[in-house]
Amino acid sequence: MRCKMRWTLYYHLDALRMDTVEMANVSLKRPLLEEEEEESKVDEIKRQKVSEEPSRERPNSDQKVVIEVEQPVKPLLEVTKNKIVPNEESANQDDEEEAEESDDDGGGGGGGEPESFADMMKHGLTELDVGITKFVSSHKGFNGILKERYSDFVVHEIGKDGHIIHLDDFSVPVDDEDPSEEIFTVLSVDDKRQLEELQLFKNKEGNVAIEVIEDTKEKRTIIHRAVKSLFPGLETKTEDRDGKKYIVAYHAAGKNALANPRKHSWPKSRGSYCHFVLYKENKDTMDAINVLSKFLRVKPNIFSYMGTKDKRAITVQEIAVLRITAQRLAHLNKCLMNFKLGNFSYKNHPLKLGELQGNHFTVVLRNITGTDDQVQQAMHSLREIGFINYYGMQRFGTTAVPTYQVGRAILQNNWNEVMDLILKPRPGGKYSVFSIWHIPRNNRLMYIHSYQSYVWNNMVSKRIEEYGLRAVPGDLVLKGGTAVYIEEDEVDSYAIHNVVMPLPGFDVIYPKHKIGKAYKDILAADNLNISNMKHKIRDYSLSGAYRKIIIRPQNVNWELVVYDDPKIPLFNTDLDKLEGKPPAVLATEGKYKALKMEFSLPPSTYATMAIREVLKMDTSIKNQTRLNTTWLR
Image 1 (cartoon, rainbow, N blue to C red):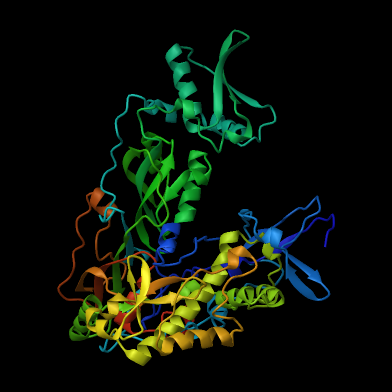
Image 2 (image 1 turned 90 degrees about the vertical axis):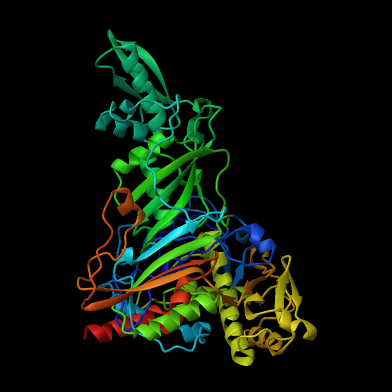
């Protein structure tokens, strides 16, 4: 349907979110919240069939988008005689538009008071709904609070060299090419405002003239450097006007200047990328990148990183940025809240998603009720056996419409169902109205990857129920990145930790025992053919991948501590150590008991699933909310 029109579309990107909604704290009844989980996305890993994780976008939860269409457009979904059919040309476009931010907390179209978080979660999923049903340990579960304080959950990235990344150095590499510290103070607030408007093409004059009050060559040089350093894309020149000296800033390279930092100003002897360690509190990675780019007045796409980190935690990770000096980055430490940057170095390469070896977690479970023996049994089991490598609850969304259901409808080519699910009224009577064409490509892919995860979880639960924690003939293991069957005479050569299970796709093989048929049955029940996983829209064709069914964490350590004040930190962070704060003084006796645990996990592994194994509790927000409400009453 072609028409010339102006559309105003209101929609909740809640339907797209793969991460969990944040809560201030969680129940005393052993719940877990959304985790600080690393979803690595890297094509090389996919090709090796080790895992298949989609790129993880994290759109803001409630957004109002106004889209003006002044020319004919061809939507992704066309309505023809009560049928919705895909427009394949549009579907294959790399649709990466960014939604405009909105201050609307209530979302669009529903009216009335926004519903409470607890009411919304009444419609949410439980672990049972997504196939998470089994445990591998035999100990008795116990109660505890996870993330009562976001500082109780700390994540350190493990770099590609295997070392845990820490923030432990604020010093800046000395470079003769670096400008003096005066560049940060020589421009007035009004100068900076005008220059920023010019940089963003919001200045109608096309240039900004800065009068040189104390006219010396040194002063003019500092102003020239300040403008070029702080506002990439701008050039400067000196002009005489009415007997006064002015530094005139202007665009030299058109509208591409902002996206492409000035190459000629960067010393050839220095690596093009400044690598640094980012320490952040209660902020996810994409939000952090957006804040940094705003303060540096550059586009976010000049930053690179190895993995994303969620919000409600303290996280430490490596970031690389193209042609921004360490001096300029270090200056941000003086003006940013909940961020610290350090460990600067110059290198000739950016970072790539998936290059990390994993993440190291330091977690405090407060107010635990388990006996010392129960805790010891649980932690010994985690260290020796591990946990089931389920996809965690945040993989399946937090709204009334599970994302795997949308993914299933896409794979079925059931576009009416896709739109029915996406447009389904949200709890509280709110509607989500938009064309799937306006969903970024990576978010569309997350729907079908969610369905793959749903199938995998269910099949792994069935595999463990059927055969337990031992390798059996017909299981799959990886040899050099290729999946092969375990034969009868090889069973004793493999442990359960070697066994992998496939995510469904056209380029994987399935177990030879009963679980192979179970895969076929679960897909057939959803009107999908296990022998034909190719989709007529190429993006939605699933090649499949392999994932280990049991993960044994590395570097597992734990201790029981007691405390009286629930507000005191129970360990020191990297920042605490840099600032010289003394270690936390722990009481020998106290009203409450906490379990402090540390462990390392490979990429694409959910820390909440490890903690679930310790506590033996449903980690869904629906269950946590119910327990929390009961406890509060």
